[in-house]
Length: 552
Image 1 (cartoon, rainbow, N blue to C red):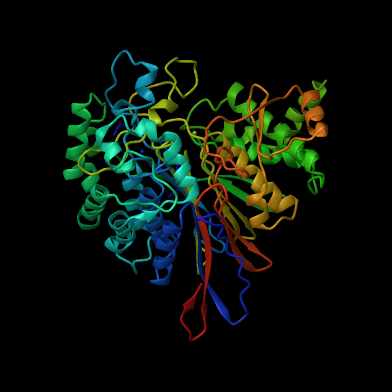
Image 2 (image 1 turned 90 degrees about the horizontal axis):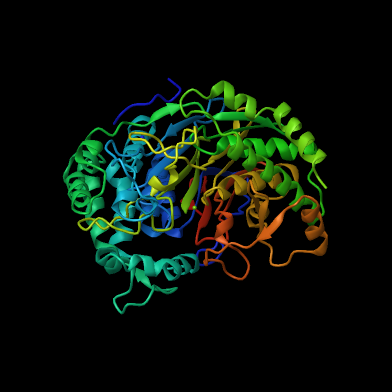
């Protein structure tokens, strides 16, 4: 049964762009699609679909494989949240996979303790979420060990470093050198950063995954892996205890937030996640342009900046007052009337790293999954026995109690901008997407949805389009290489100040600062996938020819 979460004390460039655009003959049967941030993870999900697994089974395999093949963005010791649409005529639901702060915190906490090192980690949810999803919603056609095996293979045999992953290692390599165990895994033996084409092997992670395959996810919370985590935390003055791990709960299943947008039902994640802010941005875009978006590139950018600034400002000035009983409050925040009111007042005044993947199976079940260890490479330290990176979600809490639900407390959920989303029409899934990127998640997801729905762009075009981002203080960020004088003038009239991201992982065309949307869409009755060119991902749609073998 769906329920409000209650507080408990115990959660495509792959090297080249590989988006699927396959138009299937009528004699073909759609078998599934996967879009993720690494080609290795996408292939792991496809292999499960080919074995007869459903979208949940495939999502488990993709999740574990991403933790190995894109270690900067996610991993076994992070948090994973799933938005699930079971298929035709059924209601979507959220597997609420938040992580939790440890049960015992010191009286005095320094800001640096929440950013890096063992004290920066919340109690991870990912293994528990994957196990829960598999037990309750898996097909029963594929075993747990079979779902873990692709990740074991990637860890043992290694994966080839792609351009985005190379830039991540190059920019954050120095921080990984501070711990000998992390350095031994994520820095080359000659002391240099990994380069494009190098192969990264993670033997200790393979050892951990073999235990997970044999003993189940529970080993992470009450077996040898749990003992290792607790010992490592105690050695380095971390705050997670064996009791925290032993008592970590199953995720709850809760209702998503849903609005009507241009004839679609848009479902997304509830608090503490950022879905309501993304829905508010869509309402604001629709209020300005009730039909199609402006065709002019500059006008389109301004429409997005206006909506995103107001949505992010609303979250800053009027956050949800709690993460447990929020329905009435959030309904008001995401109403069409509230969007109209904000725009009226606004115009009168005029003068973080994560990963996301999407899966759809032959039955129409769709899963939109965002998972993270928070910053690039999380807490920048690894477990010495099993080689996985700890998350640094503790930095999402505020040390000063400002009356919001974000204050640092034991056994509580961290603030998050995750906004995994699914669009449906007449009960049928039409678009599955999400993004990494801290607050830019909200901006990226809203823009891709608006471009696909209101601008009539294909999903590849919508994902590949340059993006903008605006924050509460009127600082704005624009991805496109050149900003016209016309756009600068329009921004000046609104008091916007143009800033440039300083994250160091951009190439000459795209910047991962603006997210990494991995999406699957049904266009003219045909499923298509899109992998974000800002990462090393891959999107593939597979069909089964009648009486023939599967072909991609």
